[in-house]
Length: 406
Image 1 (cartoon, helix red, strand yellow):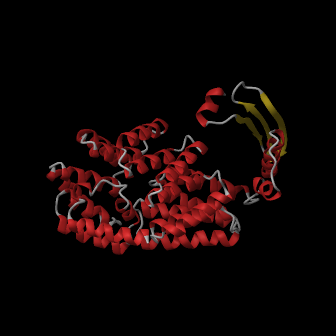
Image 2: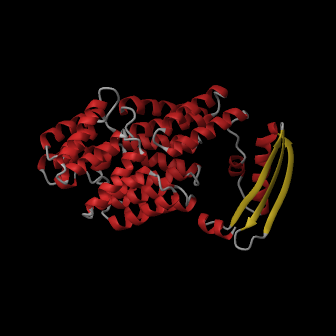
Image 3: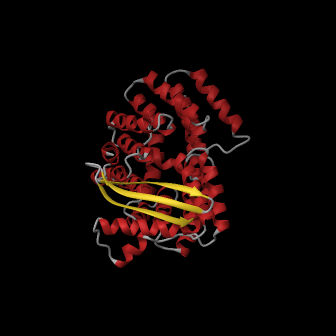
């Protein structure tokens, strides 16, 4: 228990068990001091399955009472707030969030589960926010065009807020849309702040808000938010990866590597961490290590075009022209059957030193509003590092940056 408390950075741990026989449940729960294992509170519940949400409320309020936490009326009501009375809808939503956390191909499964949850209970607000969150990431990871995915993300976020304007997840989704699609950092910050006000424990709001702050040059504030995210959820690989990404943005590559190693301790197969490690090693001239990590990212992602194009770009920059051309040929062929972001072709041509072609693809990426375009603009991406002093490349990113900042 002490080890668990240390890993989670908490003073107390709730543990228990659930036994099920038919529609009968026996739940035992106890609140334990992480320092010495002392039981602060314990209780046993014998109920039917249909009482599960009532049991959840009872346990929450009992813990609050035992720890003598004083809550205002509104805060207490939030603690026991139920999104749905439908157990199947709740189960489907939880499954959707599981696959949302996995990212990659899991995002497509997440949408399916969220839709099924809405079919079970159309007034259940959480799945609407879940779909909004998922469409933003489907665009970011390059599975869907931004102009297709982001209007849908906005639609579902607004539907969620029409049902309940106090749901932090929907405000976070809107903030993400404002930052990465609308290029409006002012509105993004407003929505992130509102999300955190409504649910200070919602980790994604903190780690994505940290990217807004670093984009506007408020480095100390950015560190505060990302460290808050990790304090809230020390086991979140996404929070650790976002911290590493922020560190790339301020060119602290060795610190970024250290943070990524923490993420990989939690999940050795986390493809984004390997991709970010590859970027760090490249900037530190550790080219063999960079290729090794990028190749891992390609394999773990199932040859995702984003991961693949970065590997191809590095091949080109290191003089491995034939390997870069093979990647380019693969993406051209795949683009005939599936969506491939224009930005990925710009990566490849920049690696090959073909700046005219790279600029042409960058303009296409600009018109398509590729969600990832803001990342190299804000210096979180090293793909254009070798050519950042070319006046045409610099002028392009300065044009985008002016739109983002203003």
